[in-house]
Length: 400
Image (tube, rainbow, N blue to C red; front, side, top):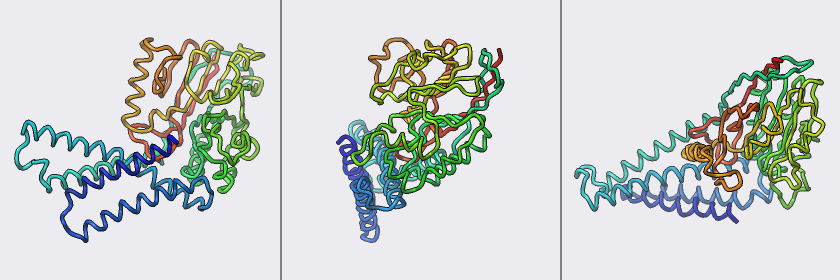
C-alpha cells in the first residue's frame, strides 16, 4: 500500500505540476503543445502498465526492465524538477509582495517561465546523466588494514567486498556480468558479499539464468555471503527462503546464516542474519567456539549497533544497506544524522531511521575495523547523485 501511495503521489501529482508549469510557458502552437501533452500521457501509461504487471510475470524480462527503468527514472526526474519549479514559484510569490526583481526578469512573464523551465530541464537531465554514469562505472575503494593477530597459514589477504548488488529486473544479467568482471579484475584471495544480493523477485533470477554469472566468482579462499533485508522480502508466489536458497544452491555461494567458518586454519568468517530474519541469534552465541587468538571477520548487512561486533572481538566488521542515501540530499541528511547520533543525544534504541554511527566509510571502533559500503548496485533508480557505486578492496596484513 505504501509503495502504491508513493507511486500515485510521484506519478500523478508531481507529473501534473511539472506538466502545468511547462504548459504555461509554451507558445500557443498545437504542433508544440500536442506532442508535449502526449509525452506526459505516454510516460504515465508506461509507468502504470509496468507497475500493475510487475508481479504477474506476463511481460518479458526485457520489457519489465524497460518499464521499471522508465518509471524509476521519471521518479527521480519528477522530484528534482518539482523542487526547482517550486523554487521559481517561491521567488514569484516573494516578488509579488516585495517587487525586488527588474522588469526584464518578471517571473509572471510567459517568456521567463519558458526560459526557466528549459534551464531546469537541462540541469536535471544533465545531473541524471552524470548520476547514471556514476552508477555504471563503480569505483574501487582500497583500504589497507593491519591486524595485530597471528594467522598461521595466511600472512596477507586481498579481500573484495561487495554489498547491495540487487540483482533482478533493473540490475539485470548484463549489469551483473559487469560487476563480476570488476570483482575478478581485482584478483581477490577472498570474496565477501554482504547482503541484498537479490533485489526483489526470485523469478527474475530464474528467467535470466543469473546463476551463470555468479558461478564465475572464484577466489582461493572462497566466496562467502550473508543475508540482507531484501532476501527476506516475502512474495506470495515464492517458497520460504527461496531467494536465500537460490544463492547457495544455484549461485554457488557459501551463505553464512548466523554461522561461522574457519578458513585455511587461519581466520574466521562470521555471517550474521539480517535484522529482518526471524529468530536472529545474538553475535556471542554465533561466535561460541571461535578461537579469538585468530583473526575474525564479521559480515552484517545493516550497520546498527556497531558495538556488538566490537564487544564480540571482531577484527573486521563489514556492512552495507545504507547506499549512503543514494541521492542528494539524502546523503547529506545521513551525514548530519550521523553527527547528531555520535553526540550521544540518541541511543541506538530511540534513534531516527536515517541515523547511523557510520552511514558510509571506515571507522576504527575499539580494536575493530568497521567499514560501511555505499553498495555496488542500487535499489530502484539507477542513478548515483552525490554518492558512488563502489567495490571495496581490503588489503589485510596479519602482523603478529
